[in-house]
Amino acid sequence: MKKILNISEMKQVRGGAAPSKMCGEGEQLYTCTSDYGNGQTSIGAVCAKSGNAAGAAVMSAHGAAGSMTVVCN
Image (tube, rainbow, N blue to C red):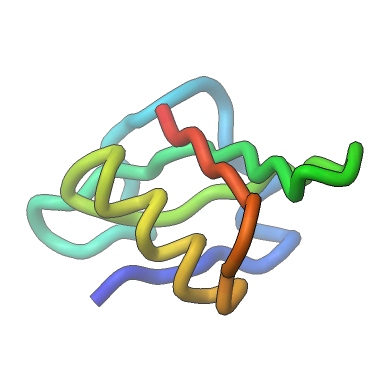
């Protein structure tokens, strides 16, 4: 199961995908940028097995529909 990090945990994130004690076995910590299509963006982190899975987890957490774009690395 993917874990969406809280603000305190996100402050510990440095760089792109990396192994982390906060993630489950076989997962890495991905930094994701969400673009809402209206000039607003946000950055966060998620544990996942791939960049695509991380993006899907973020989209799911936001209940994303429409023009939201998520890029994770």
